[in-house]
Amino acid sequence: MRRWENQNKLVKEIAPSFAEPSGRPPTEGRRRLERFLFILAALVALLGLADSIYLTVHHLTGQDVGCFASSECETVLGSAYASIGKIPLASFGLAGYFAVFSLATLAAFGRRWTRPLFLCLVATMLGVTCWLLYLQAFILHAFCDFCLLSAALTAILSAVGLAVFFIGKRSVGG
Image 1 (cartoon, rainbow, N blue to C red):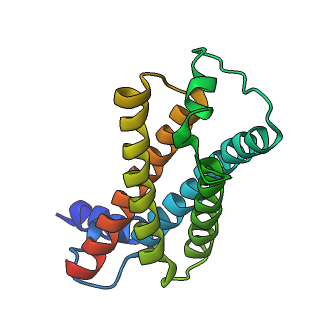
Image 2 (spheres, rainbow, N blue to C red; image 1 turned 180 degrees about the vertical axis):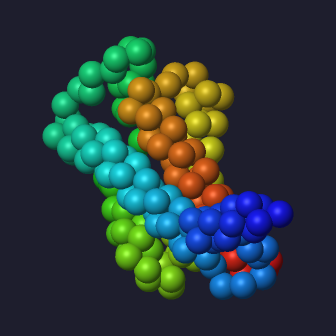
């Protein structure tokens, strides 16, 4: 019996998030996990930022984009759906990824007010991504490698956003 008590005490010291039931303020383990998720989101957003900068520059300079897996990038990027007026859609992605990077970085450093903004922005980006995938699949019948990369990065950000949402909900709601 004494051995069991010592092990239980050790578990409580090492892993407080697993030793106590929820219903209390977020444990250090949850805070650490949330911080890790926000850092991951910031890194993913940097990849999306690089992708968006590349596409924006190529669109504005009129250069062809070299696709790797398919030869349909120019079909997608040269379509009427690739810009709003003279503003390329990639520049909106650039702004979105920069905002996600900024919000995730601030959240990683403990700025709690950024959390709902991060979640709303990622949800908006997911909605736009779904619309753009629909356009590529059913209207243009062509896919752009860089657009698919952005869609994958947005999906990762959405998964991170869901994890952050449920971690926060569990911390608050018990």
